[in-house]
Length: 323
Image (cartoon, rainbow, N blue to C red; front, side, top):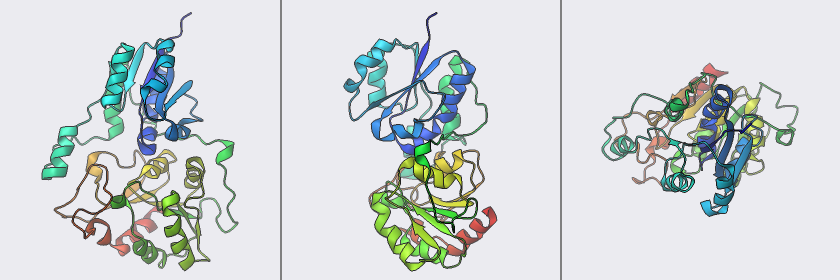
């Protein structure tokens, strides 16, 4: 009996790949198709333990790295959840039926450049499911997935017991999404709960700065953990404070309560925590916001009010409601 296979494509990023997991699960459970996935190598670990994926293909930079292998698989369908020039090239090269979703690029452009909101009131996950309606697949409404492995376990000090500690996410790929260190310190100074800090290598110095100001309350893990290990800490957190970043979506996969501080981006773009208890903190009525649909290296206006004008008191109140 011939096994029919489907290739799901999303090249980046951590958060975007986590957001594809409801589609992966639904296709695997609602069809007879064997699910394969193609992404960039540095993000593949997000899916390493996903039981619904039979095979993961990765590239560093170019499709030619795997194109010969993909052609040999003889896929029946391609589900394009990236929808860019690279994925269109793949569709052409494989020559098989392909399905995609409404990316709403024009609507995003209008919002960023003219502050005119024509975006549909729908989450990106729900738009992803538009790509698989032709296969008879429906959203099972079970939320996001993240599967941990034994290598993801982290031994934390006894002070940081499961469901007692908070996690503060320092990391964001773009400066205009990052929560300023003074704001973190102002929030922590009003809390007594133990706090773990996570983030990438670029946030290690900021983490040491913050933890050094609260040595008996805060432990810094920024720059010291894998994605999976950070996910493990999130999975056991009492509540999480995070900017708009990939970790925000991993929080949602574990259904942990979250307070999200939005800088230059906005939940209107449809990338807020999916099907989990969360509260959005935004500086309202800023005429420059959103300045980009993703993020920037620096504030175009120089004032960074979308973060610097955030209310520590309002954030604290939201955190306490989530604990």
